[in-house]
Image (cartoon, rainbow, N blue to C red; front, side, top):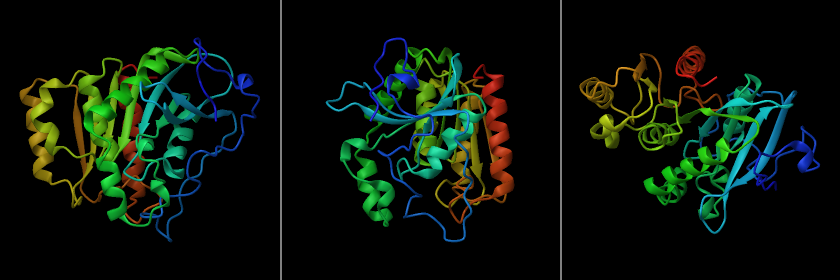
Length: 282
């Protein structure tokens, strides 16, 4: 494993590894509890990328593991924190990082559930996974995000004033909260993250967030979406946006799941990239 501790940021030569080195500390494959046999997930090449496994100091006895993808060569880049679903760091999340890296970003996916010691992607039952995820409390996770953005600012390959965050499902709610509590976040894009606990906190938003939701989502009522829209408007958060896709279910971007909606996933991805650029991330 790579311990990224050089004050001015780590370079591949520090670790004597190939830029195509296999990453081994995260699950190889897609989350078993959700993968569809009929799915054809996108696989992004590592050509021209540096792929690293690292540890981010976060004040815990064991530091925060992270999967990192970034453009090869020297130079500084905007950075995006990628927050996983309840299934942890598996091939879908790693590929999201590679997609962003090929667009010129430093992408980092922290393993927020590492304290449990459980291999969530390998579990086949949601009932097994939920209690483990519940152990990752709000303050702990928000603190881990702060540790990641602090670490990013210290790296020689990151533009410290251009840090964004995106997240899916469980990670979508993390995006909304991070935009409220982490001053280093310049913009966030939340994919179908729970809203109910956050509606009353809309006025706390310090960075703009784009929320991407499906009208057919059985877990996030449209009443919650409309309530958040109203709360954002009442709080004067005009830079925040929510887009609802009429034909989309929960998980419509997850190309390894039966809920995948290719057209809406592509539209949401394009909107995400435009939103980041419009708000100074990239």
